[in-house]
Image (cartoon, rainbow, N blue to C red; front, side):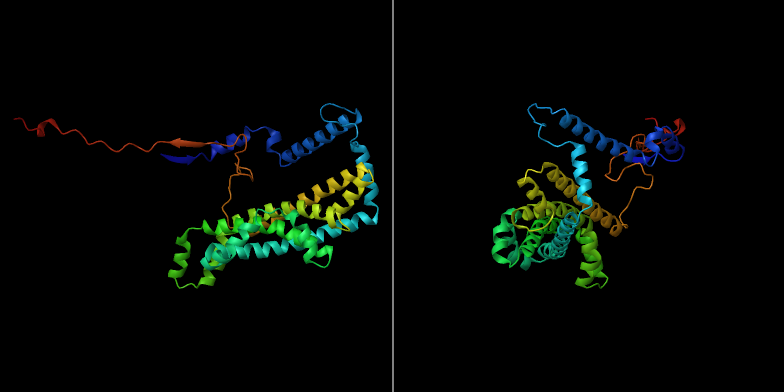
Length: 317
């Protein structure tokens, strides 16, 4: 069986038959905005009506109260100071984890010596939650700031290292053998074959690592921090300032979304050489968009049949 893609007038006709809303460039953004507005509206309704079912909304602040508190904090200096402290910690720890995670993961995947020396130790440490290392960080480092950066580093290091290790191992050896056959050195193979080939898997580990880093840095700030979004959120909880708690939660969510989007954007920039769909029939997640032309399946032509032998050439017994 061979597959052929319908193009030309078929693709144009299919695109023309799509709903106009689906063909607008801002259509998907409107859907996302409407989803967020519906969530906020439901939250406002449940909290304003003080709905008390199996889940109790009577003590949860309304959207209006949280928005008012958020606007008040935007005009104050402590909010921006906490924001800057958390960003410095997350960027420092994540950068260290990215460099060391890619280096160690590549070494373990390509070197038997590194695998035998580092593999057992890392496999024992990997299941330990990064937040469980807070007491160790307090004992090891002279300041809480260094301890929080260490927690952030430990949280992001293992996802990046494991993703890099699997991505390097999954590379086909044909590429490396081709470069070596043409006289390339081991370092050239590493720089021009291994790392570019494993880059999609490495970027997946970076996306996971940045999310886990935010979880652990906020938890570390709540436990042993002196400044930061997590520290301020915990302080608001201790003084029963629930709107302030939700302002901290919203700030954490927005910061996590921005940093994850930055990592994804960087990944797209450095992987421009990857094949992309030219027709736009699939979205960025790889799913087929509604109304896109489907692939037409066509059977292979049947082999030619031999022509019948003329009657004059038949031999009679």
